[in-house]
Length: 227
Image (cartoon, rainbow, N blue to C red):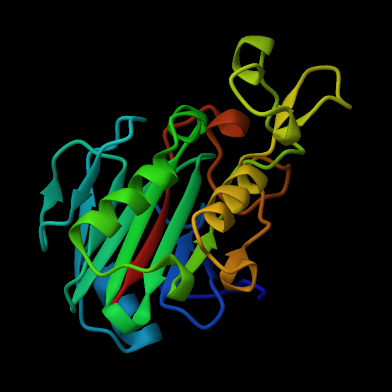
């Protein structure tokens, strides 16, 4: 399943295959405005109100408050129609989950700290406790993020991860968060064919996405899912 780069009124966006999931690019200033709801309406035919949260590189999972910013968390979910969930990223991995039959969506901000603390698994746990979420019938989407080609870390970070997801062919260790995340999703019941990886690196030179590591600025990409 291939993601596509499309032109939109807010600039270039990366759109997931066959799903109302997209990520903004460096063309967009990252501010939350009415143009996002308009884009969701025009591109996907969905009337929605955007919900976000204050992200803290933690592992808190919150049910989205419609049209409001939730308390500090790094994963949002909803089982309501007319809701869009927005997660800000600038190298961290955005992980979106959709269970169409049960009208359940989730959006996760997974940086290396969150990944090390199993934020994806914790989100699935929260969904299974509070809803009818079933991973075997759900889809997952891994958005643009820093990839193993560019994610250089110190040994103090590398030792916190399974060696299977550390590439030591470089001068310093590189972490492969998307590969680790895919493995976790499959372990938790997702069918591999239902996991769509954008394979887009935010850090690479020439990338159309904000990257803190490359640019050292506060720009943010937004990954959004709606229903």
